[in-house]
Image: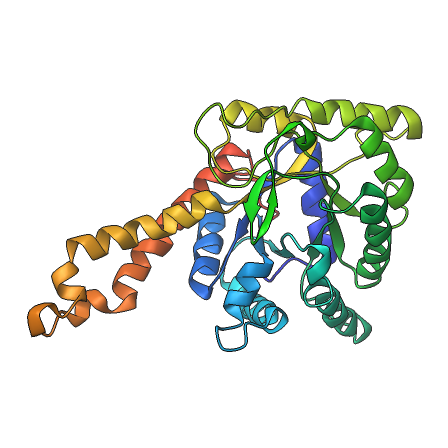
Length: 340
């Protein structure tokens, strides 16, 4: 199947919300990790989301120019071709983009999709994220309004993060403290500024103690039940039941119980990066340790081309990451839910 159309992406999200499951959103940094994500979704018979962060896009742009837009566009175009070979629907998304990178990443990418839409085609990406969590909520939502209008005109869904996620990702760092919990007032101000669908659809990354990366037990206190309070507070004022489509950031390392509670309270997308990075790299490390005298020309020897050929360890890396994506589909209850 091809990359999801705007109509199919909306249907995917609606089905997830109604069925109380969520799609794994897998960060990729190469054609190989893209294939691993697609393979994992296909093996799980689950639709899914593939995303590129600013750092991932810069890496994809090559170390010579490190151009984020060309890197993201190139992989997206590649995905539009190869995804047709997988029997699932996949949406393309860009991950965290702070204010200082909007002009070099999200705004140009929205413009690319707008040109495609104006020409009668589908957008290149299906959603983009604006991470204004480092700004005041007022400034965050003001920029969110502008981006939501631009995204909607390009038939794209916007994701917004209104309060911080702890830890570090692509150079954006937030402390792990009591500010990592969104309040009902934050949610109400978001609904007032961005609407509840009438101005365009958006996904909401609210904070309930989320932290990027994986930490030892006790360092992170997740309160996914908080999402229920946010839904109820906004529903009471605006009269729309379960108004938000939530995103679970910092999903790596979360317990099955925490994930289940989040799903019951409106999470339709959960980001996964750290765990899949490790799943990809672990078999590569194993290969190198087991074949050190073949991948290296030790003591002037010639090595072994069969083991330093990137395909020899790359296949194992793809398989391992695909298995972790398949596991994520099971944890998020999306296994077997692909659109027919």
